[in-house]
Length: 456
Image (cartoon, rainbow, N blue to C red; front, side, top):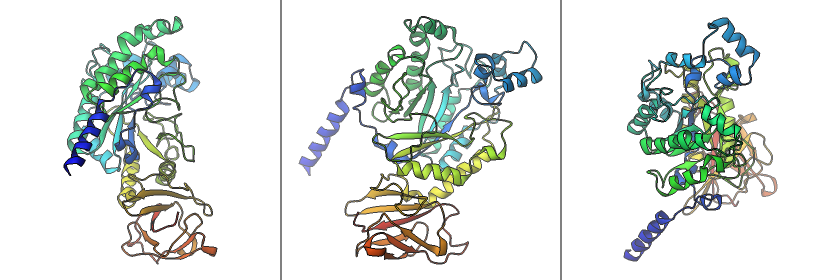
């Protein structure tokens, strides 16, 4: 026992003494902290000054002044005085109904294991009192609150979730950034005095365990000084042992460098990937920010969300599910319903989701809309078949599993064992679901069967 303890201590010391150089070769060799792969579900929160017009999308300012869209121009002409500026919206970002403990409870109830709040979007407005953003921040203009700090405190006090932050590297109309851009990114004044100091400030002040970078694509990582920041983050920061990062650190980095890969918005390849990845997606099909003019059909149903989520997990990914709060700090009922429906489903079926890994098959070889996950225990492997559609005659005919004399089958949320027979020629399995009433049905959508003692 003493020898084992000494070896463990030495191994722990070795892992924690590793130092990463500011090169992609070194940084990409860092193992992803295990909590992230086990978590499976996170909540994305897009909130900022763009939540005030709440029209078109969170790119409203760009769609008005950068590459104007007729609908946005018409909206502004009909509803605001001619000399109105985007900065004037900030005073209307009031957040008077924002109760961070309510958000924390709601996100926890969704079954999510981490959240990612927008600390700063491309508009440059910071949701914390950044000393690098003068009066364009939530403490100086608008709500007069530290929105990042309040939510971080509530999440840590009221839940077991990890707290993370989104941060945009670039800002559409920041004069320093535009000057750097005009120099062909030979200058780095914006990086040196604005965006990188913000990142260090965020990490030291709020200790986020997810850094979700964005707004990187116009310049290479050398301009952003990304590798130096990541080396500090992994070597010296207060979250060096637990933090995870994404792949948006400069043009050409996406799907190639970083902790987990996002590749593109709403990325869901539908097949197993070699590297850990995340499907960052939105409940609103057309916007990450809140839209006042959204229609009911613009929101994904719980069936839509579960299809995305289950296929993502089966193929080795996490899903980061986005909500857009209002300017006054409420999460609208349609978002809340989807969050709580997801939690309702996970309370029954979470054993087939959390801490699972991809199986040898991701979807079934015979039946459509069946996805697999698995867990390896000390003595046996559990395989989970998740059905998106209820089978005809209560009979599930699966082609991928190969049974043995020791095979057992159960339905998550149902107390008794389920009967089964081997498929034709010993290939596949036929699962007979017992008659279920409304009261005994484990859940309303997507049903999970746990199989042990398989040969594959």
